Image (tube, rainbow, N blue to C red; front, side, top):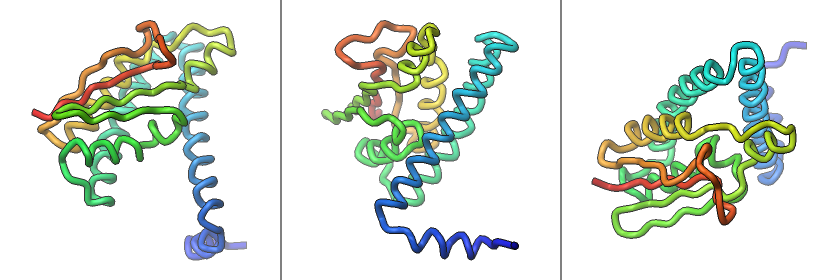
Amino acid sequence: MNISRNDDMKMLSSLNEWELIDLLLFNIRNLWRVDGLYFLGIEKKYGTDAAIGIDAECWEYIAKIEARYLKEFFSLDSNLEGLSKALRLTSWALDHHSKEIEIEGNSLIFRILDCHTQKAREEKGLPAFSCKNVRLNYLKVFVKNFSPNIEVSCSKCPPDEHQDNVWCEWCFTMR
């Protein structure tokens, strides 16, 4: 049986709103599963440094695509409010169920409160993944492509210790 894109679109259009949302989130979780599995495979075969290097390159590429697409698709302004919405809609943030965003003056604080990646590693008896550089590079590229007037810095992210149920915290400042 030949199935065209049109056939797929008809099938998707037959789903209700919540089914579409569940399907979207399921596919995002699957992308994260693939990300984790390929990372573990590279780490096992070539070591953690090689896995982190490849992971960082992949996420920098994705950051550029996501920032441009989200800004254009949702017609977002190049300010902190626009960035707040864009960040929430990234594949990275959508997959985290517990997060906080605060905007005060010329700063936006973004926190991940419950990190499934770190918890999965804990459950497997693995050490915390030192994701600070990978995520910082991702966010720098994301912000550069979203608005050149915003800078990002990291307040905490593994390998930093997490406290008060905050795994990572990022500060975005409007210049």
